[in-house]
Length: 162
Length: 193
Image (cartoon, rainbow over all chains, first blue to last red; front, side, top):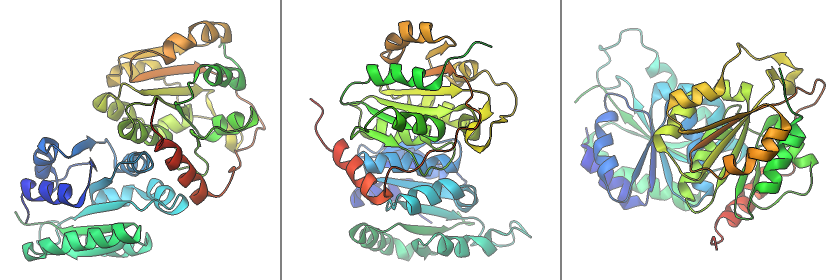
């Protein structure tokens, strides 16, 4: 839906300094452009729970991090996310890849479609679902809204098509 | 196995840390750190925490604040919760990060149940790609060698064999989280001389 350079420019434009990430087949191809961007640092972690703690440390240290993971990683993130976003009230922002949303025949029986959106609600993110390229500008509007409100937010990026 | 009292092990860090250093403590180390005296502005007592999150949190602070040394204290059970963080730290290679693993072989704050296996954390750290790795089992050796280990070029991993404290409780939060987070961020925003 979006190219790596598009995403890297978007993240830099809204002021992100560090992208804390685990790759998937849609988000991973963005990594080289993010890593190459002079205003961004890509921090590759081994498991998604780590990402929230790294982002929390970055935020308190004065940086502007973003967590970039797939919805499966959101499922894995539970306690670390809860601790950083809710115990410590850190307004962290995430981009979540929504596995197979655009091609639901890919993984018959996969439950990502059942749990991703309810879980974003359960974690009380202010989030938007991005399903088509014409929503590109909406991403920046939503990020800036969350940043101004100092609230945790997210963009759920529909995946499943090149 | 030879081991040292945790509070004596922490005392070496307390005596060695510079005024500009961040010290992250969690679980048992947080409890003992708070019992040793007043907290400094750059002490991050990670209570409440997500178990295993102290090293990645310290990594985040270290990446955001390259002019400060960050000393992250973690237990063996907590380290097992997020072993991949050793690889993450090695990959990011922050020269200002020191991870200190306090290995007492038990989940102390839940009643001293044994932690799984008998992992060699120093070997795991080396195998993960961390270049500066130290292990101390006796307090005399730690007192003698601690300063050099803490001052080594990071990322550093120091494994300390410490005595379990059966019956010791979990740490109590020293105050409201929102205010503590703000105070910590404010302290980090001060320039490093």
